[in-house]
Image 1 (cartoon, helix red, strand yellow):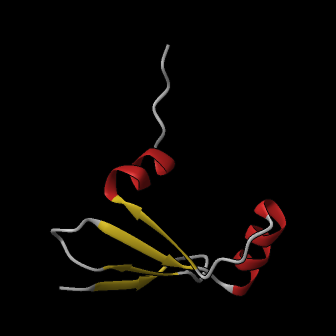
Image 2 (cartoon, rainbow, N blue to C red; image 1 turned 120 degrees about the horizontal axis):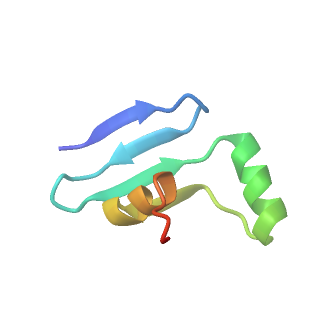
Image 3 (cartoon, helix red, strand yellow; image 1 turned 90 degrees about the vertical axis):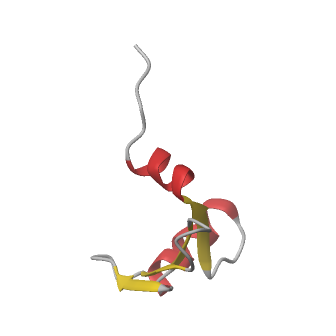
Length: 63
């Protein structure tokens, strides 16, 4: 099963399979420019597994 939606920022998000837990985020034109400026590389999309995505959305603070 493939799930797709468009984020509030215009990026297209696809989850290929529930078993794979790989999330692909297709970047908008503005996001592609930001990536190019930040790391000097071209990128069409970002792929993260569920754990990596969770760590970036809700990082844990160690006190």
